[in-house]
Every structure is written in C-alpha cells, then in structure tokens.
Length: 383
Ligand code: GAF
Image (tube, rainbow, N blue to C red):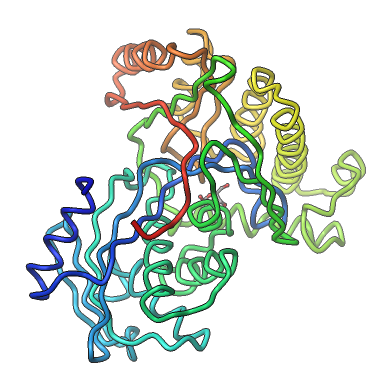
C-alpha cells in the first residue's frame, strides 16, 4: 500500500474503530495555458499532477460528518443537515469537505453521515489546486459510498458549487474539471461554455522535453478580493460590449475601440488573446509540435503580467530567470498573485533551471523556491 493510502487508512481505523470502506484520490493540477478564461466561458488546457488529496471514507449510521486532517492533526465534527449552523464547518480546511456534502445534498442526492480522513501533498496556496483536489476526492468518495450515478463533468460542477457557494471563492470550473477528468500523459482541453472536453496528447519525454513546476512560495488565495475583482471587471467589459461573455468577442480591435475604461480594455485583451493561445496550443499539441509551445507560454505570461496584472515580482523573476537559463518558455500557472510557474525545458534541464532560479531568488532576497518536474497524471479515482 502506498504511503498516503496507508496513512489515511491507519488514521481512519484509529478514529472509527473499523477499516474504511475505501480510499479515494484526486490530484492537483497544472494549467498548461488558459488563465482566467474559465469564468469568461472560454478555453483551458490543464493536466493533472501526481500530487493530490488522499481520502479514507466510510458511511456512518447517523447524520454526522466527521472530517479529520492527518496533516493538521485536527478533527471537526458537524451535522450533515445543518452545516451552515456550525462555524467550524464553513471556515478553514473543513469547509472544502463539508461543502461537498452540502452541495450534493443541495442537488438532491441522498448523502447521509460520513467519516472522512484526509491527507494531501499538494502545496497549499501554490496555484496547484489543493482545494479542488480535496473537493474532488470527496465527490468521488460520496458517489461510490452512496451509489450516486453522477457523470464526471457533473461531479466537477458539484465540487465547484462547494467552492463557490460554501467556501466562498468565486472561481470557474478549471480546477475541479482538471482534478476529475484528466488522463495520464494528456492535457484536457475544456470549452467552459459547452463543457465539451477533448484530450490533447502531451508526450513530453518522447520529444526530449520536460515541464518544470517551480513554487515561488509566495502564497495566494482565491477568497480574497483580487480574484473577484478580475472577474467583475471582465463581466462589466462583456456587458459594455453587449456580449454574454468575453469569449464572444470576435473582433478584438473593435472591442478595444469600443471600451472606454482602460482596465476593462486590458482585461479584455488578456482574455481574448489567451483564448486564442489555448487554441493554438491545442493545435500544436495535436500536431506533436510540443517544442513550439514555448513562445505561447511566454506570451501568456506577458499578458498576465501586463494586461491582467496578476503576477508578482517573485513570479516574474522566476519566469525571466528560467528563460534566461534555457527554458523554451515559461509562465505563471493558476490564479495568480503568487504561487507556481511552469517552464518547458529540454529533458534533464529542469533541475538546473530550478537551481538558477533559486540563485536569483537568493540574490534578490526572496525566500528559497522549491521545484519538481511533472508528468501528466490521472484524475480522481478510488485506489
Ligand atoms: C483559479 C480558479 F480556481 C480557476 O477557476 C481559474 O479561474 C484560475 O484561477 C485562473 O485561470 O485556479
């Protein structure tokens, strides 16, 4: 039994006096490209990480939810029927688990009491979807435990309901879709309006490439105002342009000429060009031309920095240093204001590039970063 599986199984047994009904896993993700496009009805292209949330679960014979975090050594107990009455359920880490049970019940699914024991190796606040990993693991567990016939995309949507309406972060569907639907060695193309998905092969190793993920250790959060402000500005821009969402802008120059608000112009330019970059990335991926992705990653980063204004000095330094040291392209990944960058590198080069960023960080007086190379992994599943 792999380590995390064993850890949650042992803790579950200690807590409840019996073995769990099963152990489920849902991964964090990297978004290859397509940032802040999901809530604009646009396109995204994430892939799943091997890091994720591991959850031992079992049905109770009452209506209590007991959630336990092995990492935090904390247990919270609450009533399935009235989670909102209990502050412990709606704040902090337990909200990500309780929120899913709440969302399932809100949607009319017959979910009663459960014991849930969690551990996760997705770094928190790093832009790698630590919260979606937890939510999607809980959805997967509840579907199996209560025999719920819910399609993968609907599972992702329910996990998002938990994030939006219970935790209170106004995110799009990117993270939960990635954690639920991704497949090994592939990125997941998602049209966030139609919810159609398509796999995009990402055989990095076959092409002598690797992707470095470097955590700047500048934490970020989606519950704070900056994320919500970007979303509101995009919606205001769409309204000013008379379109349902920025995804519907077909003539960027005309849109920019119409908008009078400078912030709305910049945000619109990012979203429209980022959607185009996702489509170009998909084409290159399908044509097996992965080496050519570098310039799209670079352009995405510039757009996030200059137009969407969601990068921070650590992230910009990491991207610039990675490129200066041989990365074929690099960009921040995730919601922004900190977190991780990804860099497309020649195979075997990732670690050296990570070292060069660490040296640049030391010189700039920033905290030391950490890094690893990734392979696109499998989405949520029972172990
Ligand atoms: C965060 C959100 F959760 C996603 O929905 C998405 O908007 C992303 O930021 C930016 O692309 O991860």
